Image 1 (cartoon, rainbow, N blue to C red):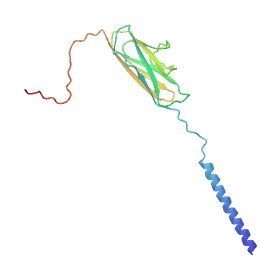
Image 2 (cartoon, one colour; image 1 turned 45 degrees about the vertical axis):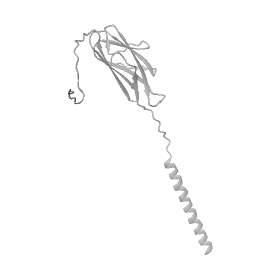
Image 3 (cartoon, rainbow, N blue to C red; image 1 turned 90 degrees about the vertical axis):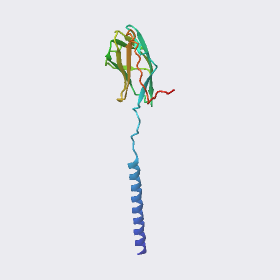
Length: 168
C-alpha cells in the first residue's frame, strides 16, 4: 500500500509541475509582442527671417526659410504649395522652380529660399503651406503693401489703460 501511495504522490507532483510549466509558457508567449512601435510622424514648424512689409511692382522679396522638426524619420517627405488671395505675383524656389497656385512641389532641403516678385500695384496676400506625408502641415502667411501708396499723414493714437491729466 505504501508503494501505491508513493506512486500517486509522484503522479500528482508531476501533474502539478506540468501544469505550472504550461501556465508559465502561456504567460510568456502571451506577453511577447513582435510589433515594435516606431514613431513616424513628428510635428514641425517653418521659421523665416524677417521680410519687408512693402513691395513695389517688379520688386522681388527674398524669404529665407528653415524647416524645424521635433523628430526625424527617414521616410518623411515634405511638400510645399502656395495660394495667392490678393494681388498678382510669382513665387519661385531657390532651385528655379516657379510655383503654380495650389500645386505641390517636393521640398528637398531643410533650408530653402523663396522669391516673391510683385506683378501688380495692389496689396499682395498669399499663404505658403508646407506639408509632410503624415498629414502634418504648417502655414505661413505673407502680406505686402504697395510702396507707391501715399500716406495721408494721419496719426492714430490708441490709449492704453486709464490716464488722468496731470494737475499743476
